[in-house]
Amino acid sequence: MTKQTALLIIDMQNDYFERGAMELAGAGEALENAQALLQAFRAKGLPVVHVQHIALQEEADFFRPDTPGAAIHPPLTPLPGEKVMVKNFPNSFRETRLLEVLRENQVTNLVICGMMTDVCVAATVRASMDLGFKNTLIGDAVATRDRELNGAVVTAEEINRAFLAGLAALGGLYATVTSGAQFLRHLQDEQVPGIR
Image (cartoon, rainbow, N blue to C red; front, side):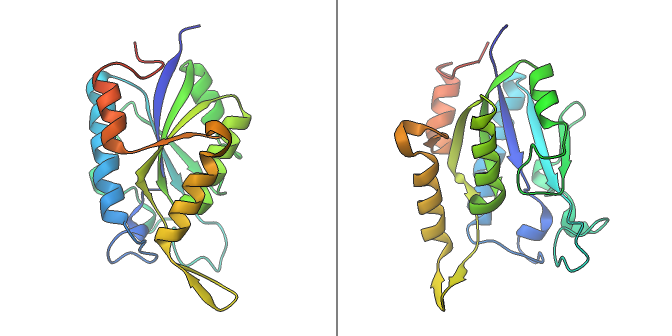
């Protein structure tokens, strides 16, 4: 079986950007880096999978069904032939066809970017490793938001740093974490596993 590398873009939807219902810190930078990745994968004819979260809870205040905020952000609009997986849980594999689609396309290596770092991205990266995929997480193409814990604010920057470090721990057990520019250099030089 030929190894194949695919790009997985998680939840880069309108609600996470400016004027959205749940704007994230660093969303603009993450978007720019995700766009560069997407263009590079398209140029090489490599598989791209978009993941779109739709909230089913009545009390949800973002990603509500049939709202503009739930749509994939226009700079990343899928092209014909690019798969879109609709999910309802943080883990992109849960109750979707993602695993089947990746296996049908002989994908063994995933390049992952998206939102939020500490929720859907982390859940998907961990599940992906458990399912046998080799993951590369693009650390400057993810974003999250400030959170509060025991009355203290934990900034989005601190959360990103902690989660990226955790996913890269134990010799990159869950993922190799790199920058978009570094990954694109390796891709250009065909030093990425699974590039034919």
